[in-house]
Length: 78
Image (cartoon, rainbow, N blue to C red; front, side, top):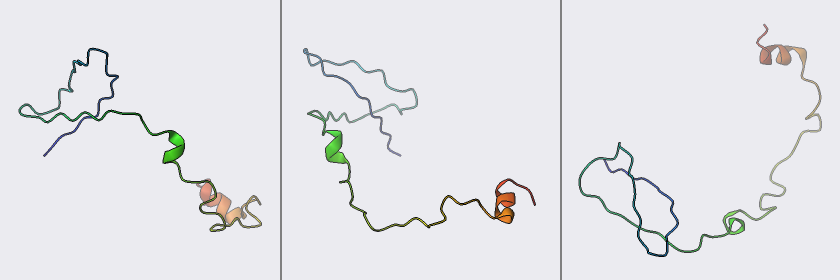
């Protein structure tokens, strides 16, 4: 089974890093991949507002008190 660990760092000016790896990683050959570059702004990762507009509804009695038998069930009473 392959293992993976994500370790976030800031690359220093000398471009050298020292890592302490978790003890549960298996010993032996490993591959190191460095992904660097500006992170995408949060806004570009979010879905546009209103994308699901009109696809749902809320019942008129949404905030009305529950019927007694249903309320008893939620409260664990018979």
